[in-house]
Length: 328
Image (cartoon, rainbow, N blue to C red; front, side):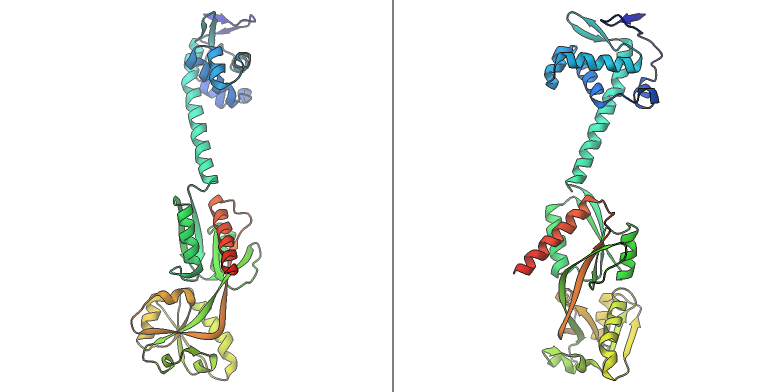
């Protein structure tokens, strides 16, 4: 059976529309169907009236009628019977309605998800760390970020600066917090904070009686470092500062992590260095002594190509906290 719209055009109610969703959402010749076409159609179907649909949507009845006529032209099928009391769905309209509703729901749900990510209500950030997150700037940063964005997952990943920068370049890390102020090709770098350097030594070591240590105090000492991060950084730091003092350096690498290095110090296997943030950790048998006039700068490194909204919020908060710290 054919139905005619008010300007005399005729469409078949059953015009091969078993795949009307394909016609609307996949076929190239219907690519001009717009979101508002679907919204007007679904609203008119729910109210059974173009006038009531227009009131519900806050637009003119004539606009509803015109856009639904455009939709029918695109589909090649009449979707509504028009009569004095309103409109009712044709066979084609009945078949088209479920797909149109589903499409609108999916589009709305996707828009809500994207908006949530943009507002950083949810998301995932991977950060490279070298310094301890037990205290200090990084601890304050992650704590504050967690309060502001509780549904954003932040995964700290330990490693050395070269590994972190390589991961930032390939987007395997969103941002890295590393020592130094060196610039890295393909990355943005910004200095954020500094930490004092401490010597870690056994409680009963003779140097533990001093309040503060200098490099000359350490030239005859054995040092131990981890073969994992930040062991290489500590090794290079020791070499840079002790090599010119005229003694053979005794630096041994141990195949243990940072915590076990501290235990080995307590056992008298050697001394090591650490940054200020780690000194809040209490290990039996060790003590910390500040290394005079030594300050370790830390920077954040990220890629300008990274479009993770949560990561951008973290960078912004880091800058904000740095500004507050510098004004104190």
